[in-house]
Amino acid sequence: MTIKVYNAGATSVNVNSTLVYGEKEAMVIPPSTSARPSRITASAWKP
Image 1: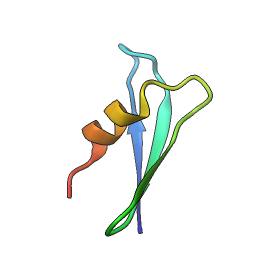
Image 2 (image 1 turned 90 degrees about the vertical axis):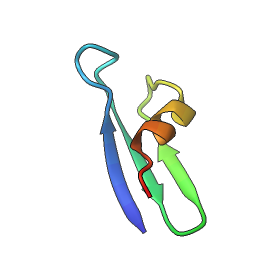
Image 3 (image 1 turned 180 degrees about the vertical axis):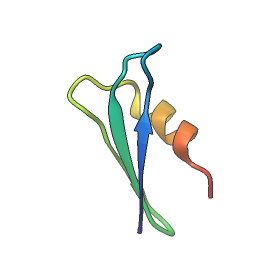
């Protein structure tokens, strides 16, 4: 299992989301005011 934190940055919404992924599954744990989880996953995913 791998855990990665994605920071949208100050020029965007300035929030952190967490991506937890393994060999076959992935899960995004968004903050309460999150951007789209699919965009976060695509930005952070680097197999």
